[in-house]
Image (cartoon, rainbow, N blue to C red; front, side):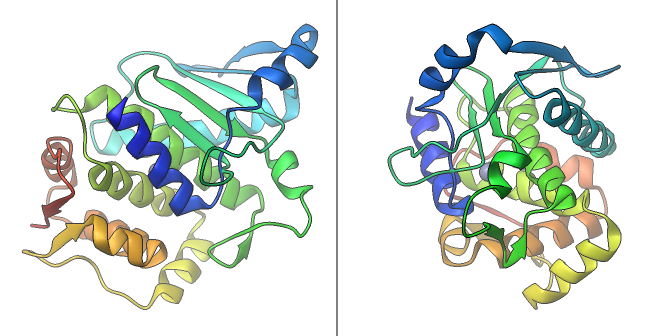
Length: 239
Ligand SMILES: [Zn+2]
């Protein structure tokens, strides 16, 4: 429960969004139309009542899984995603995606449900379009995969977010990725740097870009990921 609480608190603070608590109400109202889609050739299942939005998640997850494979992080078992049509306040505010490690349960708001909000929501000062949404899917899937591959009972929040944000950036289309990386105005974590919860809390955008650049340029990204998957505290060292 402690991990879950931390994950939720972090996700809320980082994305300014959340889903979940009203889901029961939503599902009760729409139970008859909910179906499960098994993403073609992937260990991913999506439940929901919006076939187009479910297909979009499968397309995004395919790109995410290809990236995870480069880090030797293929899912060990099926990841189940619950598509939601409503943002739900969770204590500290709404989120677009939420991963509950204790239940290995992932909830994602559909892009349509996100963009219908007024004023239109943004993420890192950008409108949330299909490409940005795919990045969100990748982010939450990395939480799920990291949970499967963790080497400690409770993986630290900073470790989780390092991996999730690095993946989120890595799978963006190149022009958008270059634009977002450039806008942060930071360089990669350097050897010996402390990758900390404090920095994460101070500036998520910069934390995300520094993490992406660090993992991209690491001499052995898969090996470093194994170190990250052993982190249980509030910080760890870059190398
Ligand atoms: Zn996250």
